[in-house]
Image (cartoon, rainbow, N blue to C red; front, side, top):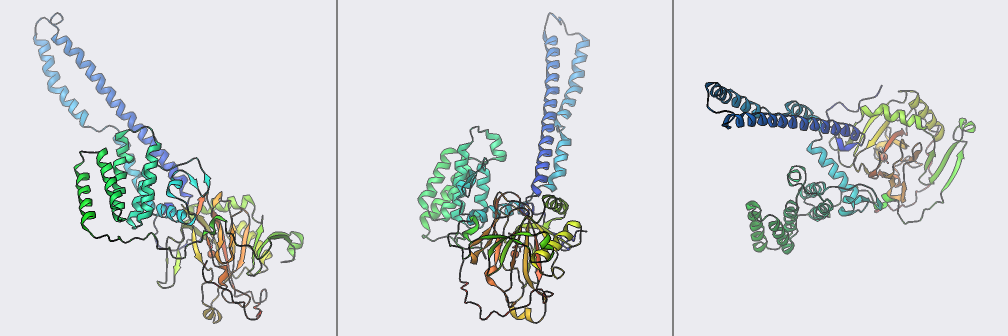
Length: 519
Ligand SMILES: O=C(O)CCC(=O)C(=O)O
Ligand SMILES: [Fe+2]
């Protein structure tokens, strides 16, 4: 059976895996249908009222028409009194009774299933990181131009405004300004302005201009800030609150010394991914890429060679091609989907696993013998690598989220000293690509200038430790943000212990003095 990750409650983490998106789309569909029924109930009520009015109008005309009703007789006096005494009370009750109460109840019952503010923050952070790593402007992202590829999709002005607000909360003023400006551009893209609807779920020029003013004040751009406020006031001249805000900003800008508000714009994220994520790194490869059929790693490969692509010899990094069948991948994805939970990362200082923003995926652990697929893949890996896979961690299946990434890290966990006195460490990593990724999502090795783009069915394999069993920093790596698609991978971390007869340590002399300065 599937192994539960850790025994504590985690947030839903909608943005941490794109597999949740189909659930959300279903929910959206249900809610829209419910709203349609609500409209139906409202119009039925309006119809009933309209018919009631019609009936009353007819009666009224009958009553005041002298030919039809020459004299007030006791009968119609009675009827009028009865009607006025009882019917208007009924109308009062009818008007008070909310139409579509069931639909409102139904919406209320679904509120807990909706994404929360923390999910919005996760998604916004995913966009921020992807934007930074792929060097995309806010205006391009908003127009659906993602790292050079134009998609038939765009963000609304409100989407952009909320990105701006998220960045303002982080005191990233420059980026916030870009997003709010993108919001203004988005506003000009829509043609029908339905004011009430816009107020409900959209945004307005005034709101965007006011927010822009706030950001410009923080950026000390006095003139531009006042201009933004003035433009907002021109749109909405009788807005007392806005006028007050404008006056305050004016006073602040005119009286305070030109100090810069603190800004996080230039502060790098820890272990951020390098620009190589687009695969456009210019440095020449040390090795000319080549491919072969591996028939020697195990005797079985003489019967069934494995297609192998050598990406680097030192450190040793290879891709095994077409080793997971489409059916296997489909089964693994479908079987693990309900069990995925936000991935955690071990923090040695806190001695705890935590959900953090530098690893935005959901994952689940699988025992090697969970089913035929995992058994067969274990045997395949043993054949392909010549390593003893009995000495390894469980498989970990992962699906990445919105802008999902895994920041630069080493898979090995111990220091060289610790490793030599006992505990097992991860000598090598096998990363199974269980899906293609249309754009982004490469596995990047910053020191090697290598970006490997996922190809469904292939396995990327590399050593984290060198021939002496020491940490090989050149194989630190990360998963680049997914731009488009759903990235599924499955990792297998293989231990050094247990490989003594498969891959003994060789002392190949003093290691070359590799320069691990920056990447
Ligand atoms: O998803 C990737 O490309 C990298 C994953 C990885 O580094 C890991 O699981 O250790
Ligand atoms: Fe890794």
